Image (cartoon, rainbow, N blue to C red; front, side):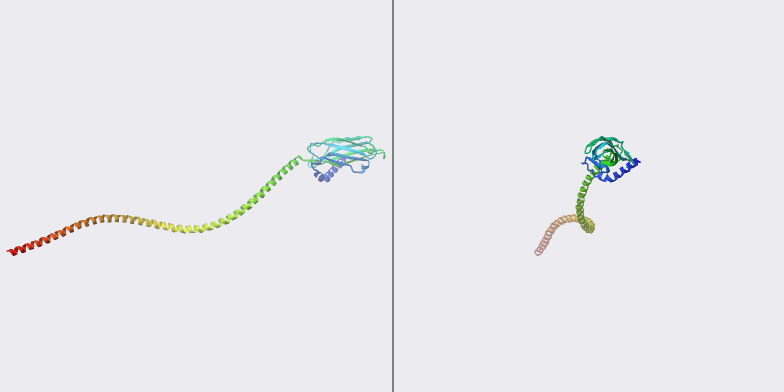
Length: 298
């Protein structure tokens, strides 16, 4: 029955104080719990523990008490509670009996002492709770009183979480760098897109101009091909005509030479003919005159 009560109390304290424990800064080195309850007018109790620890650490629990009345046989026992296997199994340290064991403790007097408790490595990270049993004899009331209560003492850090946190911080830095690079690339992309759009417009214009020039080129090429064909045919005719012309030129040169020779010969022949004709005429005339002269003489 007591065990169930302890576990229930520990669960409630963990649920209620976990947000507070999570907000504890790494700069805070210890937690101080002060007893507030029915017997606070008889005795003041404070428990000081490390604010943070890791599973496997040995933690020091310091207990301080101060009598508000004349007391005797003041005893404070301490233990620590936690969970394992993600809260499915409870864990309880052994009792540290007589952390405070003093008698008498007159009103206004105080006493303090401490104990060490090792946290197993398989205890769940999160809040672990302290649990104290306090008993004392009040001289005035001639009565022995006791109380027991739990309270959060230390927040157990997770090494895996710490590593993940470090990786997360690194990832955040890388993400910030990537975001900066992304912004830079986005700016460059926007500039490049603008340049591309301008080039695309120029390209489309050049394509249209090229298409028009291609059409003109094809027409000119067709005409050029026809001119080449006509030129080739004309070249063939020219070659044939040139050959005939050269042959005719040769024939003309030969004929001219023959003509000159013939003309020279004809010229000489004509001169001889004239001389012969004149000689013949003179001879005939002389013969006639001679005949006539002879006739007269006879």
